[in-house]
Amino acid sequence: MRRGAIRPTRAPRNAPQGGWILSAHREETVRRLAAPDIAARKGGAPIVCLTAYTAPVAAALDEACDLLLVGDSVGMVVHGLPNTVGVTMEMMILHGQAVMRGSRKAMVVVDMPFGAYEASHEQAYANAVRIMKETGAQAVKVESGPTVPETIAYLTKRGVPVMGHVGLRPQAVLMEGGFKAKGRDEAERAKVLEEARLTAEAGAFAIVVEGVAESLAREVTEAVAVPTIGIGASAGCDGQVLVVDDMLGLFDWTPKFVRRYADLKGEIQRAAAQYARDVRDRSFPGPAETYYAKKA
Image (cartoon, rainbow, N blue to C red; front, side, top):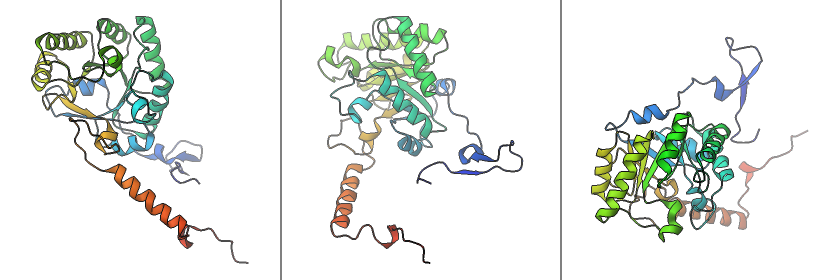
């Protein structure tokens, strides 16, 4: 059997008839966190969130995290795109499926990509339902905008849990001329605060607050009845999220708001260099990694 595959095992005596079951099904069922669990954390223990894009990484993060966000940042982090504008529904669904397969406990939220929810409420609903049905995720996330609160209300009234997103909006990078922190003047502060209030009133169960000044992050958190999850928004939010690849040190450049907890790029480079040496001096594969014919 291929390494990493789920191994079938004999069913216990009290299992339904059928002989073989998957070992994952034999384990005690773990209830996955959902929107009401996260909403109830307002003002309580900080919510822990990281992005995840693949099954193995999701499995590694699952125990530590309350939320796993399948962010449209996958376009930049995994696919090498210059921004998130080129991310498609198919990409989000593919990675959402992988993260759901790899995780068991954490709530999984999938970003709705640029162009998937702006045209009409009906378009937004169709795409949100498609994401949830095809991935099994517990919610979708949308970025703020003039008509987005109405969209959130439309979705939540029809049974779609929605996470909001205010402040710096990566999907608006072309319109706004780059990734720029928000809320540094009074007009901008008022706009972000109003967007947050409208997002919460529309029915979002939580709001990501990105790239804003500390005082504004605290003001937003105090103004809304749902949890705020900050990224580059200080410790004044109800929780924090980071792009996992940034946190693990997979890139040379680190944004100001990121704390590195590992140097995986260095570890990968060192491992690859050692592998190359072993191959070139013919020490790999060695006896321990070699199959031999059975003796007659």
